[in-house]
Length: 147
View 1: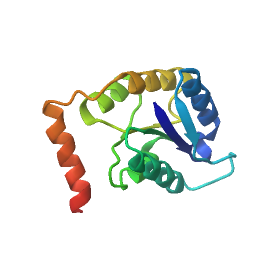
View 2: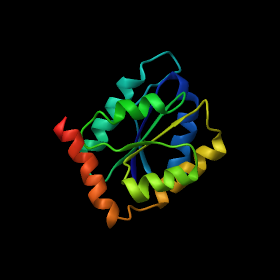
View 3: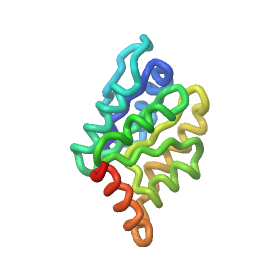
View 4: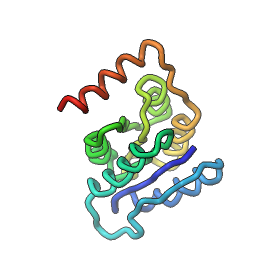
């Protein structure tokens, strides 16, 4: 899998660990920044990652801020993005299985390394189930286009 990853200053510390975790599992990772823990604005990085994921079919993203909330709100403004704010294995699994999420968002200040690892494992190992969920995802995507 190919991942684009970004954070703000509040997610910077864990971002490096997430990159190494993904690489150790054989995934391709593109670090979209920032390159230091200096204060930055999370919408800028949500936009960078989201535009890259939307442009490259089959790619995924990970966005990290203090809580994961701001990143998910900003990412979902980009056409083609289904960013899921997750907080454990189950929510990351369901984000992929039922919502065909293409970006995983979480917060460094609220999720420890073990939980983050389990979310990434769930996100990477779960396929979209399709079926009854397909029409729902299509309706979500239609909302983006109509507004």
